[in-house]
Image: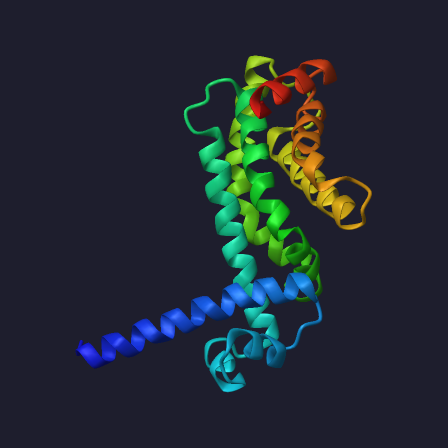
Length: 205
C-alpha cells in the first residue's frame, strides 16, 4: 500500500471517528438532529457523512454497535477475577452503568430506528455471560429465583433499560441510578435488600 493510500485511509478513518463522536454529542443534545446538522458540527460537507454512513439510521446503528461494545467491555471488566456471584453481578452493573449513563439517551433514540429486537440481538453475548454468573449464584444458593438463569438475565437487562428510562424521565437522579440499579438487580435475584444495599455501598465507597 502506497504512502498516499495509507494517508488517505488514515484521513478517512479520522473523519469517520470524528463524525461518530460529533454525532453522538449532537444526537444526545437534539435527538432529531439531521445529517446536515451533524455534518456542520463535524466541520465536513454532507457528502462526507453520507460517504461513511448511507443513512441516518445506519449512523445511529453504528453508534449503538459501539455502545454495546463499550457495555460488554465494562461488564467483563467488572466481573473479572471475582469469585462471589453477588459481588460479580454488583461490580458488573456498577461498571456497566457508568457507560450506560452516557448512552441512555442514545438507547431511547435507537429504539425508534434500530428496534428493541435489534438491540437485544446485539446484547446477546453480554446476556449470556450474565446468565453464567447467575447460574453459578443459583447453584451456590447465593441467588434464589423461580426463574432459570437465562430468563433471569433477561429480567436484569430489562431492569437496566427501565432505569435508564426513569432517569430520562427525571424520575430517578442520574447520580444515584448506578447504585440503585445494582441493588435492584441483586434483589431481583433473591438477595435480601439489606445485604444487597450493604454490598453495593461497600463497592461504591
